[in-house]
Image 1: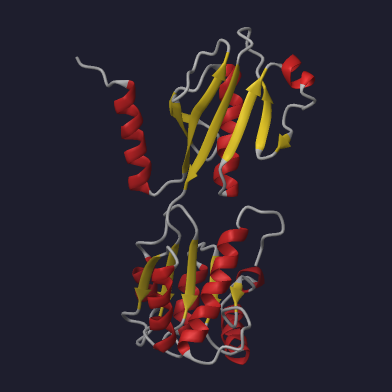
Image 2: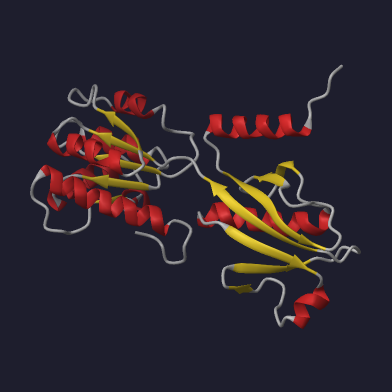
Length: 275
């Protein structure tokens, strides 16, 4: 029986994560000093909880620090650079374990080998997904303009004019259960507004916005409350959608919404980053 080689397992794990749209991080050893079990070029795949799924970047002395840094890279959506060094070397340089200087986070290497190792960790995140409910001018302008913003786009329009919520939910079914940031804009503009909002609120999306006036949304919100929907759920909807740039035309409204989505994307994982 032929066993799978480590490089094959590595590639298979990567392929599986990509196919599922799951976030992960790649840790790469870029420099070593003195004796270390991993050498420059060694790689490992890290999952969001810090688990090392595949690869090799050293034994227990390195795995914990690398796992934590990998989880942080995924959570903060930003690369990490860590330097593992013996405690006496850290002390001699005046840095403490966990301290960060000039973009380098230092960690203690307690291995008997007393080697040092620098590791670059890069998050690999699924493409953010934008779902636009509607077929009117604003919905079409938004779907078109979003193509310039590195967003996976879905325009969900069938069945909205007639109504039932399950038709709207079916249009969104392919998007639910996927990893990565998800944004929904209900731009139905009178053709399935309540159904669109219900489907959006049941999706667990990171951002939900409604294209329409405050008065119109207030009326819809009352209907949602009357049907038993929790106030905190209704409060998740940004209405009117978009940043206040005094937009008038469909293209300007689409721009204001994409500006708000960009703010939400870049603020994710940062302190005080709620939009």
